[in-house]
Image 1 (cartoon, rainbow, N blue to C red):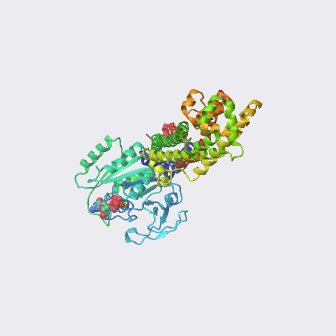
Image 2 (tube, rainbow, N blue to C red):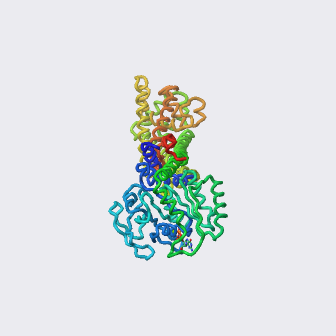
Image 3 (cartoon, rainbow, N blue to C red):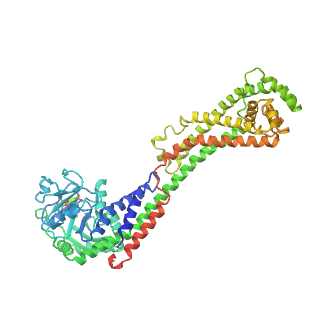
Length: 586
Ligand SMILES: Nc1nc2c(ncn2[C@@H]2O[C@H](COP(=O)(O)OP(=O)(O)OP(=O)(O)O)[C@@H](O)[C@H]2O)c(=O)[nH]1
Ligand SMILES: [Mg+2]
């Protein structure tokens, strides 16, 4: 039988599973996961630990089929309240021999379902239930609390517990979820149905699950019009057979008057169940069959969970890269606008003209660099340096441009995510505010642009390192050269001189003629490229916290290796369960 080690490993891997996104298969995946965890905790792990625990026979089926009535009839006491109002049984009642109550009140079987021990004398039909503290960790509970009532009776032998479950098909979700949980903890499922209802759809969904898990099954068809027993038994057997279900036993009970609320003709069922409790090899066979069946069902169920883990990971990956791509796009847009010369407008142009003079200045520059330098030097003497104004205006223009591009990117991400798998739900209510940049972006861009300008100035100083260059440079001032370089970065020509530059128009052309004179053509191209790349790198860093706002919405994704690891361990669990055919039952 499967080792506890691999099961425990599987159990903790299942704990790591999280489905933060709302995808098409998420509800299904988390239901499968929840049920699997429940069954491991409520049944597999405790059952493996104690194969000698009493056999747990769970009476499950449609509402009104007579489960509670049957259980009362079997034990000869009203231990659970039948009723005309549907559904009747909301809280499961477990009946067993007094010596066995500890298994169920204090033991791990039934997992974390609250349990409490009811005094045998209390008759639930009388409406005066008295709860008695069990001494277990579950403590005393009020009668209307959820949980399993454990009732000791002298009429059941040791080694057998019978559980009256809520219905599996009621409108009340809590009821059938609890019923499913209890069926998951059963060594033996006693499926109770009626002549009128055995073809209903819902029970067959449960029966299909029982078939997949090789759960030991008993079937009771209650309330059969007298005389139709054989006909109904044959029909039902055929239905079961076609679905691969071979119950241990099938009982038919003809409808007749109840005697003190009990069905008189339950001797066969009682004899079968008590026989199982007393026949140790047979009891063990059933226990092992169900256990092995559940273990063999693990890989298919884990596959479903792992599929969803992968679906979540790829949806999350797609969302994250979409957000990143939009901000990359914003950087491209900024770069494109820089190259278009967009920023060299208005005041920038005016201030720059103050440095380099008028159109006449430009033509002189193009005729002879020497005289241009003289003119430039004269412009600066005794006046506040206009290059500071140009730098400031460039900075302001650039900030606006970058802010616009970042705002556009965030809006694009929000709009894009709304149409992508899992995106709308990841955005959730926190989407408010995400469609524009964070408040921190403005100051961050300002700092970034300032730092970039400083870096441009540093670059100019470094390049002006050799004596010759210094000499050339000083006549216009290092700051003037730095600003000229920024202008070149922001111009369409980007350091290309000659005929092209002249065509490109005054502002840029003047700066480039100047820069070429100072640095030489090749060095200028390099400087412009280096400065543009540097700006992009710095803006990328400034955008990172903006992108991370979206990444944060995708937090809580399980690690990439989880899905394959789940499948691997599930395979080990099933292999170990199947490796000992003597133990697997069938
Ligand atoms: N005459 C007669 N009445 C029955 C028989 N079995 C059940 N009943 C009645 O049918 C009604 C429903 O029976 P319950 O035992 O409460 O049914 P249940 O399957 O426990 O129903 P839920 O708890 O709602 O899932 C009760 O009023 C019972 O008295 C039977 O064999 N003969
Ligand atoms: Mg009931």
